[in-house]
Length: 282
Image 1 (cartoon, rainbow, N blue to C red):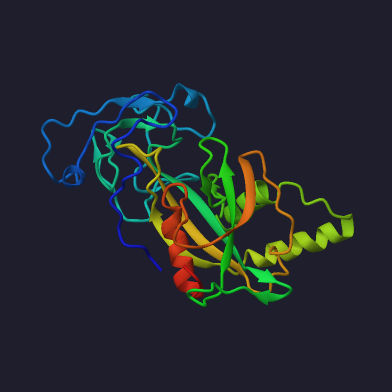
Image 2 (image 1 turned 60 degrees about the horizontal axis):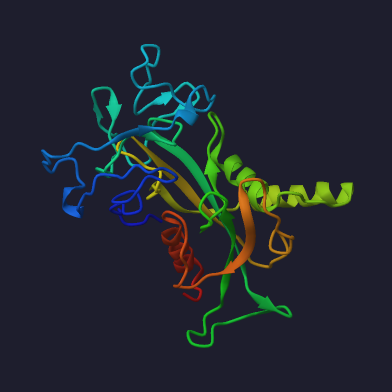
C-alpha cells in the first residue's frame, strides 16, 4: 500500500528547526528541479554537531569522502526507496525537489537517511467490548503515540536504521526503546513477554515505503522510511502492557485515531492508511 506522491510542505517556507536560518521561500510550482528558477540561491547549513559523529558522513568536500551514490555503500544503504536520485557536482539532489535550504542540516547522511516507523495499534475497549463511534458506528482504533522531546509534537515511535541492520529489527527496537522503556517483570515472566513481543513484530503489514515530509530535510539530505502496522487484534500482546516513555520521548500513550489528529512530519498520512486497512472510525 503506497501513498500518493506528496509535495513536501513541512520542510519548506519556514525556519530550519532549532535555528534562526530562514529557508528561501518557494511556491509549489517552483519545487521541481526540472522547472527553471534562475533566482534560486538558498542558504547552506550543516550542523557542526555532526562533526566526528560515528553515524555521520564527512563533509562533501572532504577528499577522503567517496560515497557510492544510489548503491549499497558497504553497510550504509545509499539507495532510495523511490528510485535513483540525481547527483550534481557530487552532491545528491532531494528527489522531491527544492526545499529552500542546501547542505545536510541535522541529518547524518547526504542523500537518503533511512528510518523505520512501527505503527502499533489496538482496539479501544470497555469491559472487553470494542467501543464504536456514535456517529460513524465504526470501531475506534488506538495507536501507540510518543511525544517528541525536541518539539513536543506527537508522533509514531520510529527511528533511524543502523548500518547493516534489518528493518524488522529497527521497528522492534524503536518501539521497545521509546514506548516500553522499562518492562519490569519477574525474570520468568520477562523472558515470556519478550518472546511474545518478538513474535508480535514478525506479523506486520507494510503501510508505506518512501520519502517523508520531515522538517529536517534539505536540498541534499532527506528522510525516507518504511512504515509497518502491527495490530494487536485481541489486545493481549503489547496492547495490555504499560507504556513508559524512553530517553527520546517526553510522553507515551495509546491515542484514539480520528480525523483531528495532528502529528509530526508525514505521520498523519501513515495513520490514514492504517484506517483504510482496519476499516475503523476516522
